[in-house]
Length: 188
View (cartoon, rainbow, N blue to C red):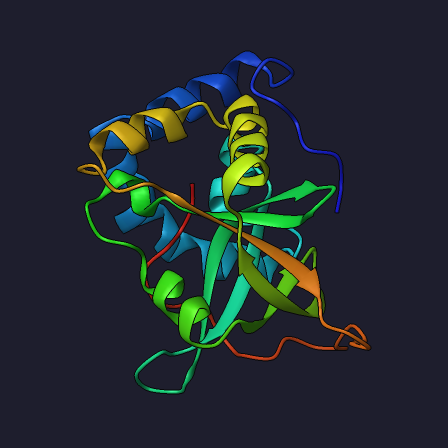
């Protein structure tokens, strides 16, 4: 994964997009409009970018989970933050009171796949807790301060942080494990 640009390092245009994404109008636009553009942009750029990534400079990855109720593969774009403890994904659901669908999927089936710039890897998800969660959360706020707004709007729900680590003995897959992008977006 390429280096992550913090909010302070981002250019003025990308900082403005990140500020806008933290507003109610911005999160609605990202959740309902931009996520529909993510799939076509992702395919047009051979898996290197999404619409949200191009506009904001945020590190978007594709997370493929197994449905908690259906058992079907679901792929969603989420922000993926490299940390010493693993790739962190944050279940903010744009500050809505309920967890995103992929949260329930990872809780039921922690084995997943993550696609970063077109390369797919099998991972195992664990929920970050205590000091590890706090450290990752602080680092995440350096990249996207809007998560603080989402946390305030989440109706008392602590926003869950998952760490994705390579599965034991897993080799990167050669092609995506699920076609298309669907389900509720986790970006940002």
